[in-house]
Length: 458
Image 1: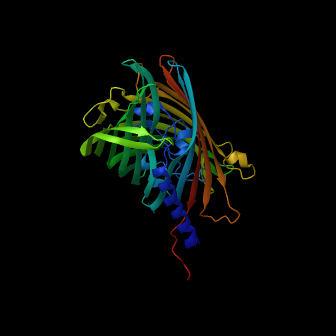
Image 2 (image 1 turned 180 degrees about the vertical axis):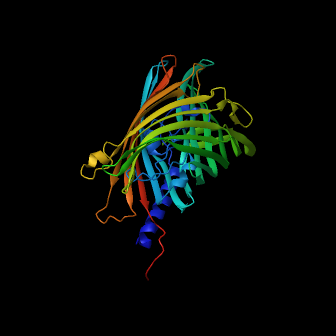
Image 3 (image 1 turned 90 degrees about the horizontal axis):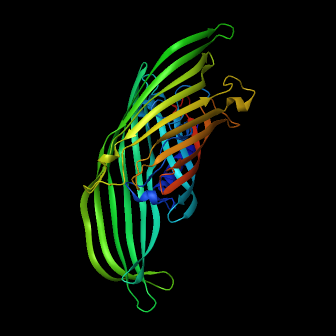
């Protein structure tokens, strides 16, 4: 029987990571984050990210060897919870930006909270489950300096921005035989703070510096729908060991509906000076406008995919042996609006993904490495940012593994898996002035247990 203190400790950890997620800002100096809602973060479970990003048709369900995770990008999978599942992850993000004109190179390495989520089986017999959590969607962080000349003097312009988008979600999933549907809702919220600073550089005349800035906060509820359908293609019985090999096909689709976020904006124009210690002192406020109401429209996203997989079922349970999945996703970024204004640097995006999961010998208990789930994937597509008008291609190869762990006081209802994932990719090609190579390593934990057990004896 689990103690109350253990449960409270886990809930405290959820709250702690939630606070970190809301306040942490990746210090990636990326000029791409200047546009739209910034750099999109891989806001999906580490399993999906290591499978090339497939998520519409992925579900680990009742497979004894995989454990249990929360695919929060398709709420239709919540029906398969058989234990309470507690998932969290951190991402190590490394980026290398290369500019052709002017020639330059910038590297950064940052630790970013990836997600925190809890899944609960509401009714195992009726195939009903609930999940909730918090995850980042995008990050804005850039500082760009442009040098030039005006009226015979040197002029330095600094463009800076920070902020990002987050999502707190709660969802429910229901299964009817082979068909399941789900719904995610919650609150999407974020901020976008940008500024343009002008400085005249002159040896004889001292000019005040100028700053034009805006701070926009926005948020509103969202709606995401998901569905999956799984059917058996073939069965092969093994009478010798009284088991059956099952070949199944699972189809999945999700739709994140268009959102119109309520926004409030503050705009200011001022002159300032810098002190000897770099302190910022306002000299004169030229213009100030606060609490300007407006909307930020986020476009709809659609995903459709399929996973072909093989399982082995016997009196020991159901074990996943291998799976192969494909997925296509698309987002209509041409419908993005910021205070009724489109962003010319955005275009509709698409992504084609493929992933493979292998379990060398899921039925053995003697070789630990054979019980590990190995994952590989790749994806190619078109990024939603199109800053130079030449389009921005994106591609990545992915790797990952799920390492099952049993504590020395192993209870029958407990199962813990350490999930790892790597992404190595690139944004841009030879036609772009700025390209970006990136490496991401995600470390996640899937902690599964039966939390709410009614006492049989007092």
